[in-house]
Length: 227
Image 1 (cartoon, rainbow, N blue to C red):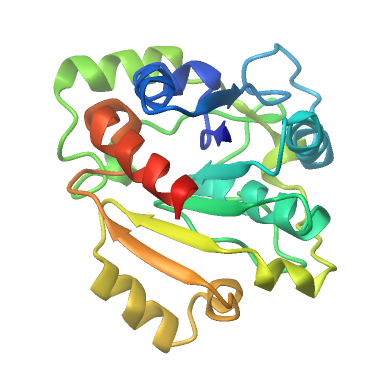
Image 2 (cartoon, rainbow, N blue to C red; image 1 turned 135 degrees about the vertical axis):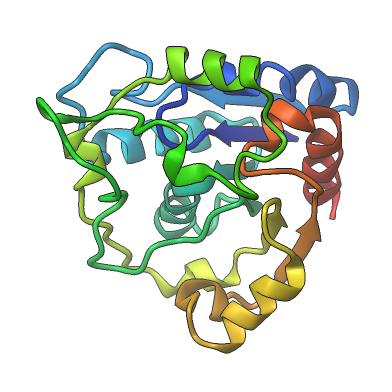
């Protein structure tokens, strides 16, 4: 099965270099995506451009693919389910949750010169980055691609409630499935609360398991694809 891999903010398709070969060995076809404005040199890219890239990959898949969204890109994966509910076999979310309709995509940090640069490690101290050593942090920061303002401040538009029929797997890295259940019960994850088929999986990692637990993450993704 085709497994489309969408990394979160500041990352391009190379973020999956440790995961993709493992998925291939497990019998699946990994398709890491490099999004407009996050690896192709286009600082003028918009959220619509990124959504179009994801949908083109969905349409090009040999069959209904699994769409994986990490962190903020959980919303991109969910937008794919909204736009192609009959074509997406499953959505897998890693350490992130879909935004609701009308919310800005990733308006989290300061924008400078029309881009949102990586803000450094201070906002991610604690469970997010506890399993990243200093060399890994240095490599991440040096390779981080500033996110265009047109992406970060783009407005999420959801329109097809058939997205709730698409099976969803939430991989829980720096938080536990029990915590995710609490957030669901408290109404803090409204889009996921409406999903008719939701599975929660644990992984003992920080926010970037593709770097720190690539083999284990690949096994979880393969299992989700085969579910």
